[in-house]
Image (cartoon, rainbow, N blue to C red; front, top):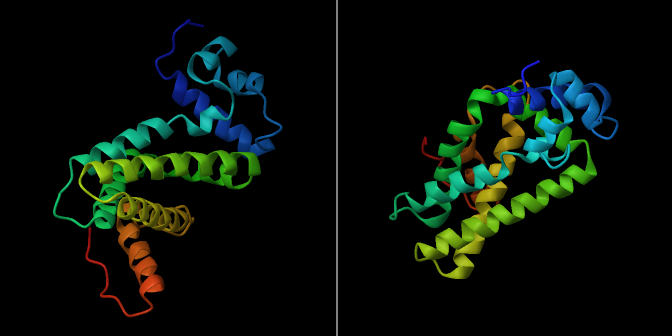
Length: 197
């Protein structure tokens, strides 16, 4: 077997998700993951600190993409709309082409309290980073924090719907609908339907 495999990360992620599905996250070992992937433990640890990181490897890239998209976005949009638009654009680039894998990952995280806690921590860090970039664009700190938090709530609601087996719409299409529902629940007054993204 060659020492270097160009698709090692993808092979390890695929093997890990298969094993997590088959026997659960807790009962799966790194040794089983590398055996299934046809790689070595050394290769695994060159890419991941532990088996949890297989599920969170894209977190920092996701955060960077979202922050860059907001920073480069339309300054005339209200903060909440700017964030939701950025979330949709990044979802198109990072999630849509691998919807099945992202959905499997979501199911594994949802089934494990330790992983849910880690996911909440990553979401909190992303919310803070979004608030910081909004503040840098001229929002006052409170508005920036509220817009970031509201956008993340809308994103989580849209994501839950997006991962359902019968859902065919893109995450970008579901985000305005989730934002509309959020606004309606806060305002308690009818809100015009969302405009297409």
